[in-house]
Image (tube, rainbow, N blue to C red; front, side, top):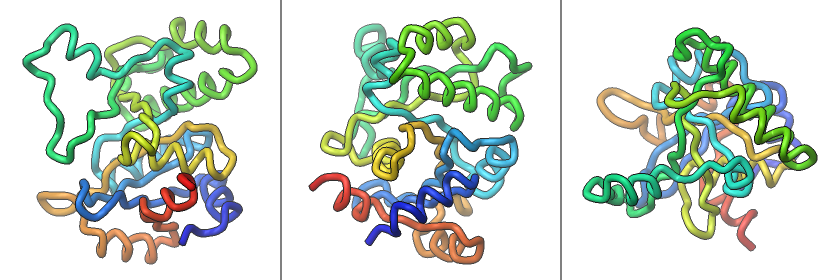
Length: 219
């Protein structure tokens, strides 16, 4: 059962991460997730050191469409068809562009990635009321390729990965579909669910399972 909306929102808005496990029989992985609206270099530092996986920015499909961003799979299908293959778990990846904000130096250190993510969040936050301005900001203030991959949700009914789980959870609690995720790694492979639960408990972070999100979001 999901924790109360207010508790999840309070944790994320205060800058704390939430740990999300996908599903038994899928990737069986845990991602650390922050709300992009509160990301600082310290958030990126924690993702890099305690999670360890690829640090990605996640948003919704509708938001991406309004900015004119498409899935990388569509580009691969068109330009490099022999390279198009689905991962072992069966879903098409959520990857789109990799970007840096123009104010960053190399784009890779904690401060640079936090800046890129914060500006992506500002861009997404503008879409509802200032769509043209948001689109202009995106194409004026970012460049590609960069060091922050953008992942686009395909919707929980179509795909049940961490991109969809994270953005659906953010929408469920009333926040923009704008987050940052990184897989939690162990020695040589992904961190086990049991060790992730212990980590969450020891650090006072919420641990949420994908099935709990699906039960609340898809009714």
